[in-house]
Amino acid sequence: MSQYSASIITHSFWFTEFSQYLELRDQGIDDADIRSMSIDDNYFQQQSTARALDMVRVVKQRVDTLDVDYFDLFPSLDLENQKIVNLLASLHLNRLFDEFMYEVYRNELLLGDAKLHSYEIEAFFSQKQVENEKIASWKEETIRRMAGTFKTFLREADLLENQGDYDLVKRPLLDVRLEMLLHTKGEDRQLAALVGR
Image 1 (tube, rainbow, N blue to C red):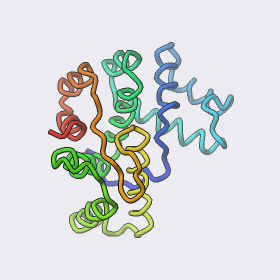
Image 2 (cartoon, rainbow, N blue to C red):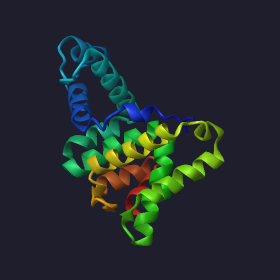
Image 3 (cartoon, rainbow, N blue to C red):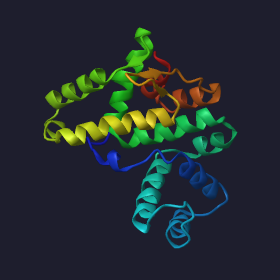
Image 4 (cartoon, one colour):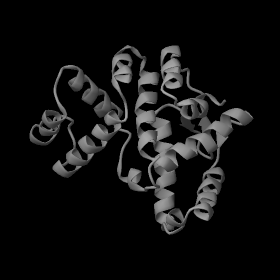
């Protein structure tokens, strides 16, 4: 797994762009041409060339964490499970987010509370700051933005629902084919995080 990074705070969930990228790849368009379409034609309708460059780079990185089995399955999944695939690709790229899913989101499902409060997120980051020098060196603003990004991604993946004082933790209805694929690919930790095992 990669080193800890806070780069995710500049990213969006980009589910629509992720889906479009996979569709373009399915049509036989290669990564270089997709990048050109993003920059030259603003295919993904980003606000600026810099944002288009960042988005296409990150979405390509997400896509690159998956293989042909995911690509083949993706179009036949319902919207909820397609969002899960995008989330999984994001987890592959961010170790801290992956740990958050396993240590915090999974625990909410296991304990049955299903209410994620800000203090629980703060406790997670505090513990990580104790365990890791790099995270300990991050500014409080970085930690706050990381927490906000994690919640935003999970809300956009329909795994959290904002209730004001807390977020309601929602257990996804995983497509059995996606569940089997995760198991086959050795992603049992991510599967456990999603279903609360």
